[in-house]
Image (cartoon, rainbow, N blue to C red; front, side, top):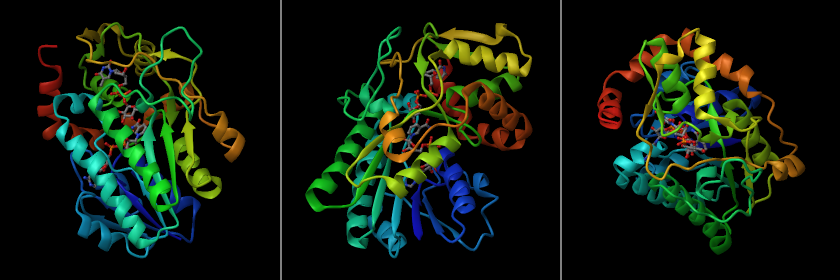
Length: 337
Ligand code: NAD
Ligand code: DAU
């Protein structure tokens, strides 16, 4: 099989490419990525030189480039996106361009290339927020209520993907997934930001009261879930994919990281809240369990420890990432907060 991956130089995409080359010894992987600030070919060092792997630099909004690169592919797995909520609040335009227009360009190309499957990676954020202290969880039939520009563009993309199935018969599947964590995660997101700030002796900014809850999913469990969807998922269907956490607040997550690093809780700095900050996410992954045999295998505490160890070991990787553009972003986002 020839699999066309978009956004494979980012966090989840690069983990997925490593996973796929390891688990599917005969398949070829094409990685189509524009290398935005979040794209990093260093994440794929282990794949370079593998004859079954090819990188093509290109933008998913560029129809001609997409058509050329996708020709001959059997399956598309679409990760490419602008992904950081705070950046979408600072500047939504590129989110509409990449997440909505880019997805539509890919859908057209997939129709023309007659691919056997178009799998779209989406997020639980499209469902909006849940309240603290409830057992409610997002399911495949939860209504869409996106509350920030990032999630609104992902919701629009999801609707387009489903519309191409019902209108043109494109064989699509969609996954709405919880907060991932693991190696190669860009240090603008909470877990790697906290780890790397602590390693640098800097404070860790906690938005608002810190009592916000995310459903944490180790990235390898996500990759396995995508594999199961490609193998057993029904076209036209959506699967919600979550992790093994009980509700754990951002403050507790940061305290766990501080304990793992032997740092001091005085590093915690409460800062002004994010606008439209979603209170709680939780995923009911029982449909994926029932229909695909999916179960997350990696517990939060154990794999948080391994993730912290990965960042301790790979200092050069995140130090390079945190230089340059990241510094300007960090100043804009956190100065005067
Ligand atoms: P990321 O920000 O780490 O990487 C995004 C990648 O997409 C980068 O390599 C970037 O260069 C590429 N890209 C961006 N714009 C592009 C364009 N116009 N053309 C081609 N490539 C482009 O993202 P991530 O955290 O790995 O997320 C991957 C996907 O998973 C996204 O669709 C995201 O919405 C979804 N998702 C992420 C999470 C999470 O916790 N990170 C959770 C649920 C869903
Ligand atoms: O739920 C899936 C989503 O998870 C993905 O679709 C997004 O691409 C991904 O970025 C992530 O979104 P979040 O907004 O949940 O992730 P982030 O790491 O930015 O924030 C996690 C929580 O931590 C959230 O409640 C905000 C809070 N936070 C974040 C940062 C960066 C802080 O308190 N301080 C911070 O400095």
